[in-house]
Amino acid sequence: MAKQPAIARTVPALRRAIAAWRQAGETIALVPTMGALHVGHLALVREAHKRAQRVVVSIFVNPTQFAPHEDFGSYPRTFEADRSALAAAKADLIWAPTAAVMYPQGFATRIAPEGAALAGLEDKFRPHFFGGVCTVVAKLFLQVAPDVALFGQKDYQQLCVVTQMAKDLDLPLKVVGIPTVREKDGLALSSRNAYLSAEERAVAPTLYRALKTSAARIKKGEPIGRVLDDGRAEIAMAGFALDYLEARYALTLAPLASSQDGPIRLLVAAKIGKTRLIDNLGV
Ligand code: PAF
Image (tube, rainbow, N blue to C red; front, side, top):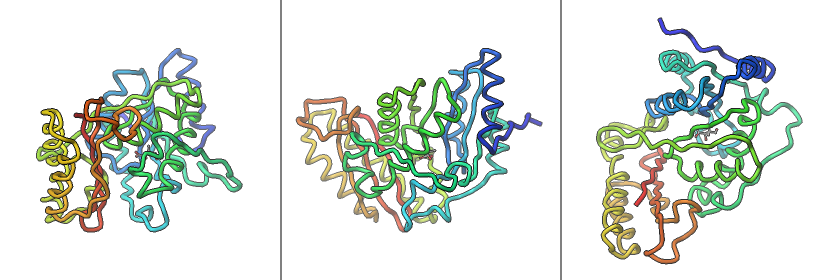
């Protein structure tokens, strides 16, 4: 049987484990998650092993990044399965604080990111989201003090925002984005895919198809406006309620000044039934 990773549930217990590794001269990677781990998370753990001697995976469903009408209550919580998956993936430690440990009574500080966090993409539909993400990720970075932290490119705007935050706050670590892991039909892996009915699951790959087609047409030099309009129509025809399909500068997520400019990233978010899916692709 695979060796079980240690579990820390308090900041002092976490710091003791980290201090012992640091005293032994070991490097540390952090993979921040909200649990409900899938193959995409395990790919992050695999990459983490290549970049550091010790791998910490945090599991914390962060209440501050959910609006009251969102799925905080129903977000899948699968700690025992996550623990077994992390044992098989040879993670060294699971950092699993409670909400009271992360946000003790009297907690009164929040990070208010700007720049890519105000790009008019996820922030337009989830205005509370990046403040909550940055506040918890800054805490995770300071608690674990890793050399490197790994995030999936699937949450591309989140990756841009967190990278900028680490830079702006002089946090001494490297933020690394790892390519999205996809199902065979192209659907990006996400813990929220578990919400899809069989019919919704069947049409869900439309998002990736529309991204791929749009990227190929833009690469060929077709006008971006027309390409995006066609992509939006395809997504709507498949039964999605589209939030956005946009082409942006890959690094800042600012709107493009001209189609000659790049690198370009296409980003999409749409709801099928009650489930909101996001995806993105480089051109
Ligand atoms: O991407 C996620 O799972 C979350 O937003 C993160 C980075 C773990 C912060 O709660």
